[in-house]
Length: 286
Ligand code: PGA
Image (cartoon, rainbow, N blue to C red; front, side):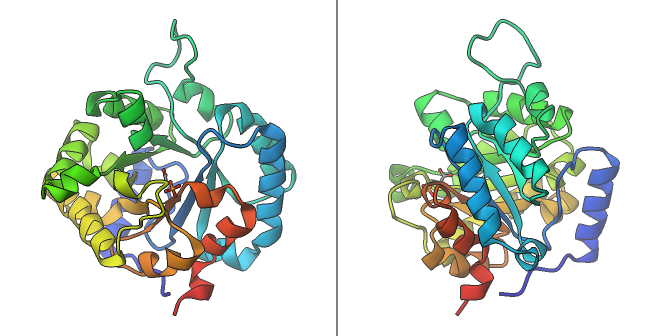
């Protein structure tokens, strides 16, 4: 697969995003971003092992072609940071969530300010499990995204429709509304520097994947909606990932699509060899 090249508009968008200080870790659309969301799996010993195995499976050419990030549970982050730094492994560290406040009486929560101190680059906000199981609204997701930006990290804002919504023909509208609410009030440069993950809820952890053309269609819709709401530079710069049962066998076909800039991988990221084969999707492209 050929990496997608930036147009001059995109170069301007990412330049202005860096100037606004909102683009920590943001490498732009010319490099696919492959993120492993471990969810509530792997203790900190297993995290160290998984990262070491992943580093063994990837080489400098792989990192040249793909930006790689792992999102372990909070309790693993310090150990993951230490092993990445000690072994000079060019894999970004990500978190799975954060609270919108910097500090305070919020028992059990972790702030973006704390994540920034652990050299976290990307923070997932609004994952469908957070929205569905923990009742997070677009307003909450918006506050979290703002907090991540305030601490110079990059939010990965998740959107996606349920099976019933898709069957009822509401998928595009649902995603439009989630974007409107989750990105409300952010300026063009901030939106151009962030990451949106389109994850149809019916494809998460089910083995059902959107077809590459359905995934492309919705990722293009995300970009068009962003262009409408936040301007063409935002649309040119924003990276749109697909997530939902991404596996070594389907990664290349998904990622060759013009509006898909990478993948958010759940189950298949727990195993280092399997995740490395997704990172290396270019080697398996047909
Ligand atoms: P999955 O999860 O790859 O296991 O479907 C994706 C996600 O929830 O981010």
